[in-house]
Image (cartoon, rainbow, N blue to C red; front, side, top):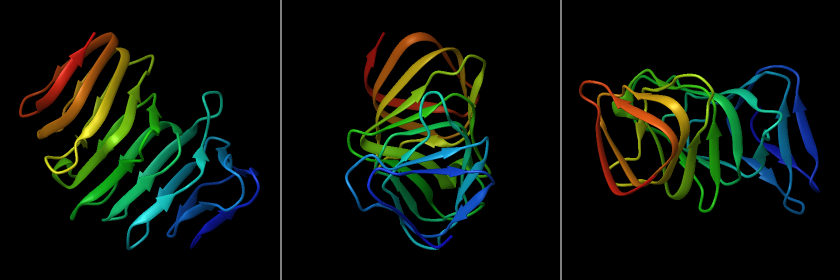
Length: 192
C-alpha cells in the first residue's frame, strides 16, 4: 500500500499482513484506528513515513510492527504492539515516537543491526510491560535524539544491543533491567 487515509474516526481492521510504503493519515476528526487480527504491519517506504492514526489498543494489539525503511518512521499517535522488528541491515532506521505519544510493547524489540536501528522520541514514551522476558536488541535513543521516557513494568527486561542507550527518564514501576556485555545506558533521571 502506498498510503492510507482513514476518514472520520473510522477503524481499519487488517485480516492479513500488510506493507505500507507511504504515510497513514487521519483526515477526519482524531480517532482513526488500525486494528489487526494477529497480523504484521511492515513500514517499507524509501523515505520518511508519518503514521497519523492509532495502531491497536490494549485489548487488540498488532502482532508485529516491522521496519525495513532506512529512514525515520514517525508514530504520531499511540501504538499497541506485541513485537517490533527492524529488518534493515544498513543505514539509520529509526522509529520516532511523537510528542506526547506512547509506544506500548509487550514482547521483544529486535534489530538486524543495533547500530543502525533505534527507537527515539524526545517527547515520546516507550512502555515495556510484558508478562515474560522482553529482549531489546535495538538502540533506545541516540546521542542526537534521546528517548524521553522509558517505562518498565516487567520483572525481566534484557537490553542486549551492544550500544549505548540514551534515555531522559527511566521509570521502573516493577522489575529489573539486565544490561548484557557491550550494552551501556546514559540517562538523566531514574524513578522507581
